[in-house]
Image 1 (cartoon, rainbow, N blue to C red):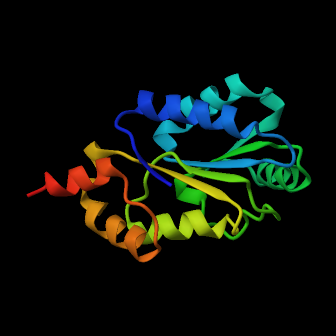
Image 2 (cartoon, rainbow, N blue to C red):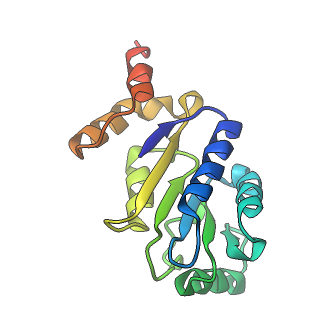
Length: 168
């Protein structure tokens, strides 16, 4: 599900709503992919919604021991929300052992191909995928994203079509 949201405040508000909607628990876990620049605000926002022990974050500076504990915690259901820096989301050692109920791409990747890899690498047929698309920074991916959504039989958000029509 692609959602056109501009600005960090709008994306944080929507993320809070998703955490509330999914009621993250050991059976309904969530993964949030985020650019490193937005990691701290995202971890802060989700930590306000659930117990801090139910949230873990992984980035390029995360120690191997903490990385392993976070992956094991997610696999066993002890970590409900895993916030992962975009720069490390495709690492082989991000072995979480189970699929999340929801995957949120807080920051749209640099390409539609990276979006697809990031989203579906951590999802199965029942996973709900939410992707926040920002007109101010992601405009260059509009046409390819619309084509992929159309080819997959998904609805194209009106706001995305408006971006495309106003591009000329």
